[in-house]
Length: 328
Ligand SMILES: NC(=O)c1ccc[n+]([C@@H]2O[C@H](COP(=O)([O-])OP(=O)(O)OC[C@H]3O[C@@H](n4cnc5c(N)ncnc54)[C@H](O)[C@@H]3O)[C@@H](O)[C@H]2O)c1
Image 1 (cartoon, rainbow, N blue to C red):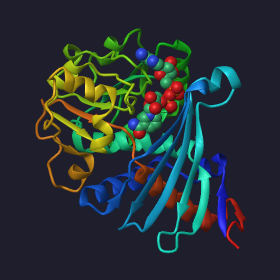
Image 2: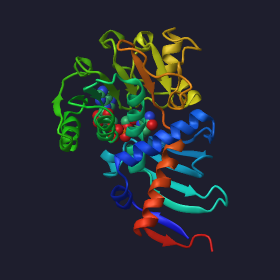
Image 3: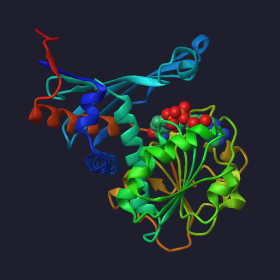
């Protein structure tokens, strides 16, 4: 039998604590070399300004396999009153290949993307980091702040979005965290006096400059996950002491990293480590109070599968979802 879980089921079962645990475990296995993360496939539907992505992943230690299918149709909210991103995680038994569960992927994506930033903050931000600046207040933003608040004693959030209504919405969404919040008027202001900077926009041209980055800052660059996207100017990478990523091949082709390399801000061998290698203890994370660290996040299916395994286990325990006989 296969369990079908809609977004509401997933939302009720999944907490940020569980997501952080699952995602850290996925990075650990990745660093230990016990994962399979084949290249993702994009079905680009240019006439609809959309893409349907297929992302498979397997973790040997966790005995978890699955595939995420996710669309990103940027005109959906305005044209169709639908979310830009939607899709499924199909969670499989690796031993038999049987589909154990089919679940909504949008909430999992948001939670695991926040958790990946949270793991990067745990290992790379200063231990006394208290203030976060965030640029981009869309679907991914609130879980970024929620995850960071679980791994650091967060006191303040400064947020900027080109759409001021989005900024206001984000500050409302995170109100229950009890943080001091400020809507600011520019990306530059979001960088002033913060210890951690998160960028999560679909921008095609960079908007964060190297000279705005202060000593000791950690940056999670989340939005530019594809060749046409870029948020950080090459000058940010030129100032970085350690740049780290999740999947090297995926990071190298993002507009941001390709641009930084083309301008000579980072050499071909400048990558310090994968986040997985740091979590697995292969290389140290932050080593002093002044270094500038950058996590270039692009997203890996094993993050989704690790979380789907937790959701499936909890759903079985609590009797959530709908059982369907897909395979007689
Ligand atoms: N790294 C990962 O694992 C991962 C996972 C999910 C999404 N993403 C990427 O993150 C980005 C954001 O995703 P989302 O789901 O939050 O999108 P979204 O469309 O819900 O929100 C994006 C927000 O960015 C704002 N924005 C756009 N350009 C801006 C700019 N130049 N300056 C400031 N604000 C700007 C928009 O007004 C909007 O509020 C996308 O590029 C998406 O592909 C990455």
